[in-house]
Image (cartoon, rainbow over all chains, first blue to last red; front, side, top):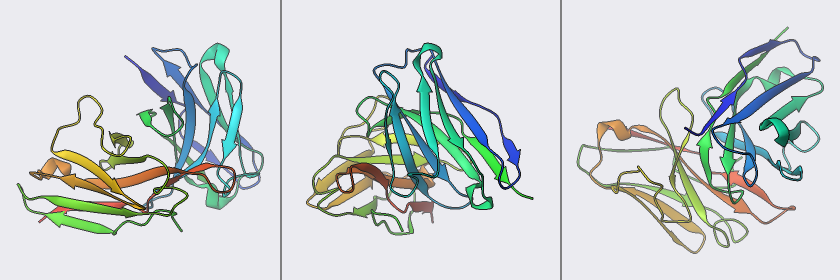
Amino acid sequence: EVLLVQSGPEMKKPGESLRISCKGVGYNFPPYWIGWMRQKPGKGLEWMGIVYPADSDTRYSPSFQGQVTISADKSINTAYLQWNSLKASDSAMYFCARSLTRDDFEIWGQGTLVTVSS
Amino acid sequence: QSALTQPPSASGTSGQTVTVSCSGTSSNVGSNYVYWYQQLPGTAPKLLIYRNNRRPSGVPDRFSGSKSGTSASLVISGFRSEDEADYYCAAWDTSVGGHYVFGSGTTVTVL
């Protein structure tokens, strides 16, 4: 079975750093892209960016450029979403998803809940 | 503010046809494929329609998609209570270096 397994919930303070992960199970990362999406409580989906693990080609939404770092390690079938300095407004559920063409997200992870509070 | 505009809500009785609209621009819907996702409460989204009107394996044929110009539609024929969910359209946007955009989302409920 093909799955994306995300890391567990995180509770952090403002200003702290964080990296969450998304591991592909049952398939090899290349030739798929991995995208990251944010969903705040009661709100819609927002596309943050996408990475091509085969060569680490990365694209960001203008809204998230400079705010987060997306990366991947194809040797362990894992993609990452990283913050250097969290803000309370980063509190949300984060989903990773797989796409063959950058725009058809056909397999999704279960989501990682990030809570940032002092 | 989402790049793609959807009505906040839609509803229907069992067996009815429910339509969800999605309005974009020439840089997204007008020039790229449209995708539709279904998100049941408390779960991850699921790909429902890809490349405007194609259904992934396992998606019931009561779900269909279409596109015309800068607008797209999702049609649920023979609406069922288990179809109550949030629905999002999405497309690649070729402006500002290229990025993906989701619609604002439509909550579909049974009357």
